[in-house]
Each structure stands twice: as C-alpha cells, then as structure tokens.
Length: 133
Image (cartoon, rainbow, N blue to C red; front, side, top):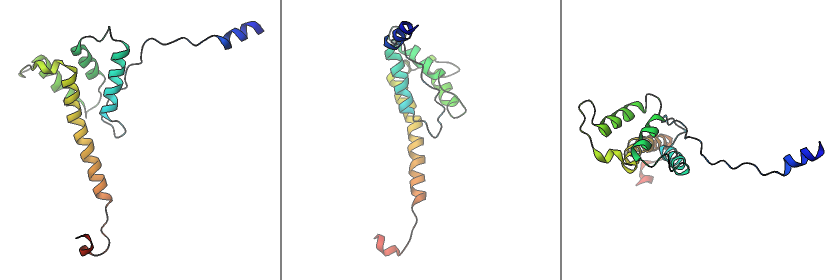
C-alpha cells in the first residue's frame, strides 16, 4: 500500500493537449472584448488543425456571444459575412482580422465612452471658477 501511495505522489501530472473554449462574451461591465478575443485566439492556437479556416473561427466566436447587448452585432455580422437577407456579402468579413476590428470598434468605443462619463461625473467643482483658468 505504501508503495502505491508513493507512486501516486511521484508520477508527473498528465499534460493537457487541448485548451478550454473561451467564456461567453456578453458585454457585461466586468468584460473587455479584447480579453475575450485573446481567449478565443489562444483556443484557436492550441487547436490549430481544427481552426485553419478563418470563417469557422468567426462562426465559433459568434456562437460564444450571448445576450441582448451582443445579439444585434452577431446577427448583422453573419448576414454581411454570408450575404443574407438583403445584405451585400463582403468577402473581408470572412477574415479573422476584420472580425476582430469590427467587434473591437463596436464594443471598445462604448466601454471607453462609458468610463469617460463615469470619470467626468466624479469631478466636483469646489472653489472659484477663476482658479481653473
């Protein structure tokens, strides 16, 4: 029994060859789309054979979005990507770089604007106005 217990403690842990899929992006206050994109890219890089095709990466990533805040972006991106329901197909939407640019433009702008407004709201005027000129 002692030998068995010692063999368990000295054997190396198995190495995990695959990565966990990224979390769902919901555009919550504690989420940054750039971190989510990095998690997606890490997942793709650790499973490269499965993710050679950029459009498959994009469809997977869109499937890892969730909620009312992200649904309009995901729906429109898919329509432009495939040329569905009256949208003209844009071949650049089939590249991961374009997807990355579009989702950052959509969600970083909103987040930075919200943070700037919060910072402005923290400023309290005290004293005389001529001290600020």
